Image (cartoon, rainbow, N blue to C red; front, side):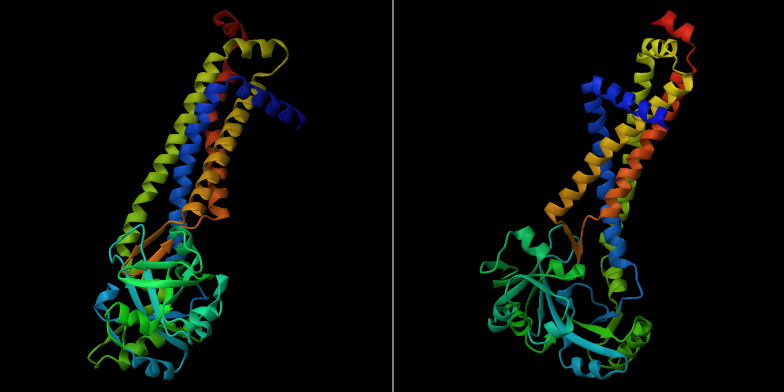
Length: 383
């Protein structure tokens, strides 16, 4: 164990001696791991938004054969019938207005809800700044999700206008539900008038059921009730609704996985090439170490340590930089009214760091073999 520690110290000194080469190698590793971590952040955010769990109890009631919010119009009086159905815990009408129905990196989404129903339906909303009382009092007030507010640089008291809707920022809210952190909540009657959609019609109904086991049965019952009405419905669990309406977005993010694979091979090749050059350029040093009593295996282990240390340092720089980048930028993808926040997470950052270390060791295997197999006589003769 002590020998391994001594070899690690010696490997660190060898890395520090060649600053320019080390800096270039670390820059390459960090760039590759940054790209890999960015891709994994998108993939993990997508999985969180689309994979159903036992805690999911929300249904989305949408107009049948409609996708963009501007084409989905349901009578507001459906609400009372939905609330009376067995298994329904609560429901709320929602009017949605967005700046772009297609896949977009910067989506602005207004959600109009009855002001008295929002605190009851979504009790987990936490007011970070401002006041929900002011939002209740003012017809043109808006509660902004923290990601939305940070991207736009908005604070309570500011005025904000988009999609022809001008609002007064009454507060900044945070929610465990990612969708709530990327939208602006406004009064339903105000948004109906401002968007000229007309009173009495909404985009969708959000329905909470008693348990996840009732999602399919309640959804089928809602569609059955309104099947013969002038505005039939299509009801799906919230995550299934996202997976359907955001299919273009899902395809785009799915393609990025190949970028992550490319980044992995780039890091592997970069570290291997760097250490191979080190092994071939350090023939004389290896011979001297052997004359001092170092075994050939120890020289190979020292090379493995160099790969591990390079991978660790580059992985820290790349993965942490990617996490800070997404935390600062707060990117949000949107498609057809649904939003996907790209939030960094410690498991993803840890995965990037661990991968960099594994790649560093794998890349060092062949250079370590070359360094440990070179005979001392040949090394001295060629030095």
